[in-house]
Length: 191
Image (cartoon, rainbow, N blue to C red; front, side, top):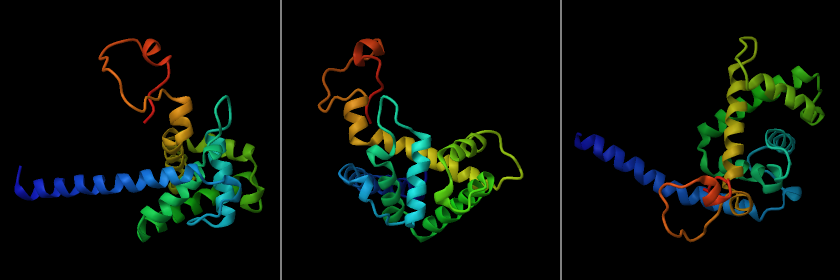
């Protein structure tokens, strides 16, 4: 490996080491926020309300809380507002614009607020499937990115990590090979 490549890799590793505490602090600050009185930093109020509706379609309440109940929308908004540079924020706005335009036109709604959860289910069903050339690729990109961010933030939330997934704040003994059912009661490990 050349010296230049080694320095470049070292710089990347340092960047990840510096960025990780920032992302974790944003995630922790979201756990104490009240989703009902939430004022978006990055998104407009209308986009924020739409975001809440969209993430709850992706991860609705079942025997576990919905995505908005663990403040995934607050995390996504803060992450984009505080960690994305201006170019990244502009990119997100462009993708969201294409997505919201597609959803409102496909549903026949006159505004984002008029889009129902059923309309979102129909749109996500199409956008999570095979690509259709008549639909802008940016709409597919936003839907996929939103799904990934929602799932990641949900799994990383304090409530889900401690109450739904297998959680061990101070690791005990290391068991290399054993049945998942025996070790965690069939639950995946918390991140």
